[in-house]
Image (tube, rainbow, N blue to C red; front, side, top):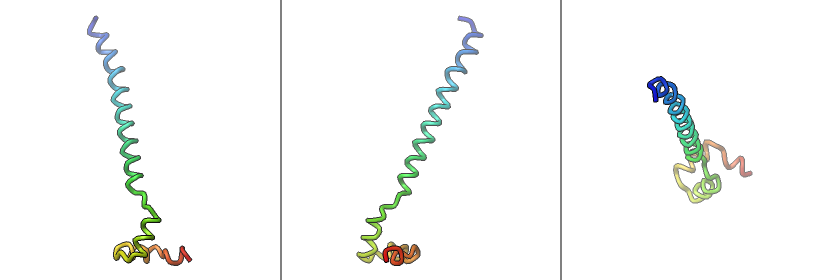
Length: 69
């Protein structure tokens, strides 16, 4: 095989694989980030009712009592 063949074939094989791998890793990171940001609203309300101070303050900021009424 000639050197020209390697010069032409290697970039067209390696670069697409590299780009697809980067795209996969980026999408995987986005999915993890979205799942990390999800708040379980029922658990939040239950902790609020139990009197958790942090959740109670957040509930006041969100006006959950007005939403529930």
